[in-house]
Image (tube, rainbow, N blue to C red; front, side, top):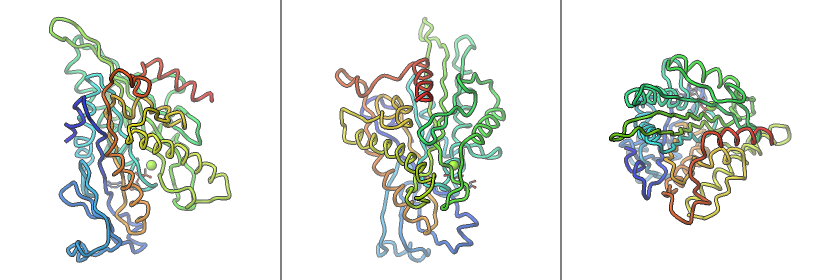
Length: 357
Ligand code: ADP
Ligand code: MG
């Protein structure tokens, strides 16, 4: 599925949409379904609701979108991982950085997709498991290192969710990884808002650096790759929450990071030489992980409920736009904009700098 993205030339961001099941709360509120996924690719968004309306789709007012793949609400975590992220993990093992980010309103299923539950682990856990499996098979001398850092950007400040000050060296145990990440997630800053009771107001960024040695013909080659997995804060507008209190400031900052992200996406789509990575903490952290020579995947999470129509429309609009981002190979003349990936120590320095600011 992600084969086009593995190609070094003329690649683009791969964009996926995941629809979550209708929640009990939505059902109780009398929700109707306003999203339909057909053939695992096409997404139909309509303001009308019944099955009959969909059968007469041509006469219904609405919009049609098409993505690299679209996941209906019954899609298992393993399928989401294998379709969206497995190729990117393979790229990381070949030394090409990869980034996956989940975008969508609060409650749309971002954390479920990224972290998941003990019984149904998500992309973060499945990716790490896959990395361990493959690195063990390929390592020349059995030695390898996998380092984790789990950061939060909240209110334009950067905080370490796992081990302040240094990346964590990981031992291989799936249960342990899940526990570690769940603990990290509990350290995330969450605030109740008027829109949702437990809205996640922060961006969570898991970065995994893999290093191993393998035999290339008769010589031993060291490979280093970085995988970034990002659970973004809710994309709903701050204006829909509480404008008078502290939270509107947080909203403004969240918007600043998301706004900066969309400005970078726009600049990349338009092929501009200057991409404004410096406009927010989030985009500074993603400088070597968006565009450039990096493989990038966006998963847009949406609710099926007509009560979230506006947010869903907004999310699908951005997902549609992100399809146009070209990830250009490095060529003479654009090194300034599409800088080669930072080294691990540069990354650690950047995180410390961002924490100080
Ligand atoms: P977000 O992180 O976008 O705010 P969550 O991932 O926390 O949203 O999802 C909101 C709720 O919906 C959670 O209770 C979660 O378990 C549930 N949920 C989300 N996606 C799915 C899914 N694909 N299948 C089953 N439950 C889901
Ligand atoms: Mg969440």
